[in-house]
Amino acid sequence: MVKPILVIMAAGLGSRYGGLKQMAPVDDEGQILMDYSIFDALRAGFGRVVCVIKPEHEKDFREIIGSRLGSETELCFAFQRPDILPAGYTVPQGRVKPWGTAHAVLCAKEYLDAPFCVINADDFYGRTAFEAIARFLTEEHSATEHAMVGYKIENTLTENGSVARGVCETNEDGMLIGIHERTCIEPRPGGAAFIEDGQETFIPAGVNVSMNLWGFQPTILAEMEKRFAPWLEANLPVIPLKCEYFLPLIPNQLLQEGKATVQVLPTQERWYGMTYAGDMPGVQAALQQLREQGEYPAKLWGQSIEKARNV
Image (cartoon, rainbow, N blue to C red):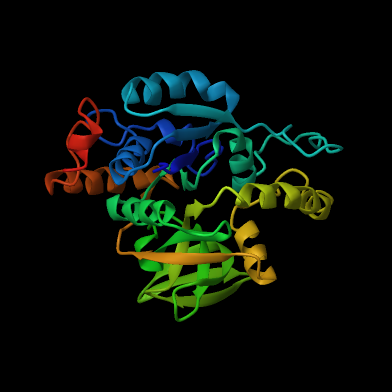
């Protein structure tokens, strides 16, 4: 059986956090959030790990992630650069920001020859979330059947500021109908609210949101590629320095066109992440509690993945 591939998007600038947040230690062993995600993915049955990074960070990633994984799995690095564009397009003067999450996946396409999962480097997703997406990706599905893990919105918020989330619309069978990107979501009693143009709209607890934990068949890559140039054509004249080719755009378009399906895999896991520097103490405390409960060993590596599956 072909093992699914884990793609970790780690090239973001992290402007709200400050510094290279993907490498910030979250426990006394000096482990980072990516350690926990890779650990969870490998014990769920994933194979190759692909880190999408900025070229200037390769040395750090090889020294930290590469040295820890050793021979546990195949580790690859893909580089997200602003100049990786369709023929005929050039980087706008002054543009330093990466082109977004869909572009990040495209930068890794040479390594994606099997069903794959995409995650953010600076988010904690939880063991059962990886188990759910691994099951989906190892089951028999058509080339146009994809999936995502849906988190309850109240489990994805921080007290340190607003967050961006893809709010999911699903049918009675748990299939995704559409995702609405909301960039300013804050906690509220009984749920959350997003603020847009000065207006506040309440989102009740229990609504599923995307945390960029996607499961794709390889056919999605061709769709990302062919839609990139039209997206540039529409967005470059408007926001040349900051527009981003977001990953949910592609499945959203395919759903509207009737060309694909996306199954929403619900989870009770709680998200932990470092959107803001003030999030660090809460992340550290949560991981410490999970270790005390036996979900994770103090040292994630230095033991076989077979043993880790029994933790």
